[in-house]
Amino acid sequence: MDVYSPPVSPALYSQLAVVLLAIGVVFSGKFFVYEVSQSKSRRSITQELYLAATASVFLGIGIFFLALTVGIPV
Image 1 (cartoon, rainbow, N blue to C red):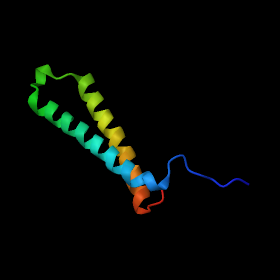
Image 2: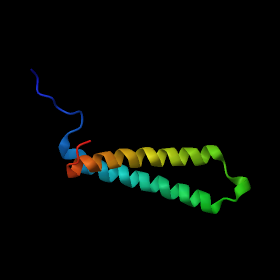
Image 3: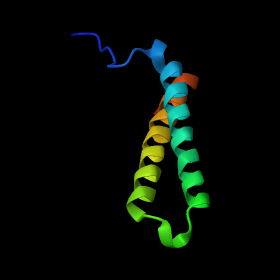
């Protein structure tokens, strides 16, 4: 039997968590600024969905790696 090796080295979990969470926070900030600075008539639902979905994906994967870093089994 072969020994299982994960596709991402466990030594990189903390670095991936920090980078992905930082990117997610940047997109969340962009979403917040977009919502505050645009009037209701000038907002675009596609732009809102793009920013929200991108932030959600990066934050979700970042939290996944953060959980792996601190030893929470997922």
